[in-house]
Image (cartoon, rainbow, N blue to C red):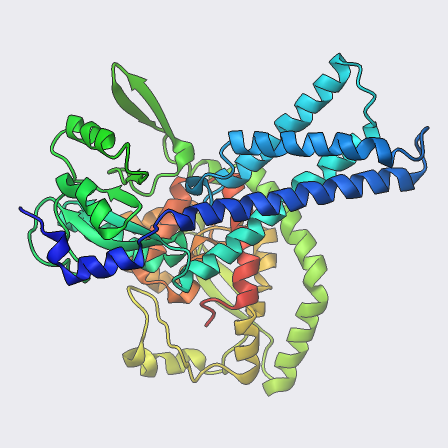
Amino acid sequence: MTLDFRSSARSQELRSKWRRPHEGLARESLILLAFDLVAVALSTVVATRFRDAVGIFQQPYVAEYLTPVGTVIAVVWLGVLASFGAYKPKRTGAGTGEYVSVLNASLVTAGAVGILAYLLQWDLSRGFFVLLFLIGIPLLLVGRFAIRRFLHRARRAGRLMTPTLVAGSLDHIEDVLRVLQRERWLGYEVVGALPSDSYEDETASGVPIVGSPDDAVLALRETGASAVIFAEGSFPRATAFNRMARALEDQRARMIVVPALTDISAERVNVRPVAGLPLVDIERPRAERAGRWFKRAFDIVGSSLLILATSPIMAAVALAIKIGDRGPVMFRQVRVGIKGRPFHCLKFRSMCLDAEAKLKDLMAQNEGAGVLFKMKHDPRITPVGRIIRKLSLDELPQLFNVLKGDMSLVGPRPALPSEVERYEKHVRRRLDVRPGMTGLWQVSGRSNLSWDDTVRLDLYYVDNWSMLQDLAILFRTFGAVVESRGAS
């Protein structure tokens, strides 16, 4: 296939739009550096002033001495952050790698400063040392979280995007395109496709085809892209892929590979280079771990504390429902729990008293996919119900289900028996762990997700469970509830 990019009006448009594709990535790195600089400087000043103000140390006023010392430590701290990859674009915006890099770099800095102070007999104030890192580390992590939120909002609005090419077989390209178009917050703007098995003008989703995988270098130059995603089918042999990596060495372009391994977390993957072959060891699925005592203990403690904290809110909601139509406050519905065992799921009643009877008449207006019933403007929902649903207050009584052991704070969506009866065999894997009050399905879109996406996220959670992931989901749930994303 002979390419003539210069004669293509589409190519001219892309080159004009992305004529400086690396400026966006550099700008993101500078933003991160600026925020870290402010956080470290603020921590130094606060630690110095607070240390002097406490009045429990032998030398009460050492600000003049500590300020230059703090400056040196701040410079070293930022240098260690950079060496740990805290400013690399591939680390920012998604996953926990960014936070881990910042935390590890900060702990190494603290350890190095402490060891050097001891070995060199450096008269460093212990109060200042403790306060500096006690304040600085959380401040750096909070700053990274704030920047990530800003980046996600900007990317969803089409700003700060990375122009990207996608290569591979046409089917695999379409799979990647669907994910990138759905998850705009990742920041990849696909400007061209490089299929190995098609010579049409564009893909089924409307992305222009600008060549084959072998044309990646030329396509990068002509489209202004700064990243290439290689999916399955990009090359017939592994040696061809390595040759392409060498060809891209001088292009300042990110080379991203989508392997055949899908829905497997990084924690389960271990790459071992053996005789030039990158052997990938895959840890067995973790559904069994999700049922162990540690997660259950976390659920008991967490649900108990949340019940105490939200009891005034639950009392107010119960009163509003009772005043609304004089009906029962609670709605008990049979759901399917771990290993297929049924239980009564508790919720504040948000629908009219004869909601179940009216369901058959509304099935023709079902807007949901798969086995789920969804209706954007469900007439069965009461005025009070609309408010508590929007704020997710109707689900607070499920804390008692968690305390009892029928549910978990985090897990797959609790399913109805009628839904489980229609499950395909692989979907029943969702029942290997306790259902959750929240989960990946909630923080990734809630009712806006298709049935296939809901199943995929639930199965991913079951197979790749970790306590860190549970904590991250709980943290993201707060944001999803506050913004009422996907609430219905």
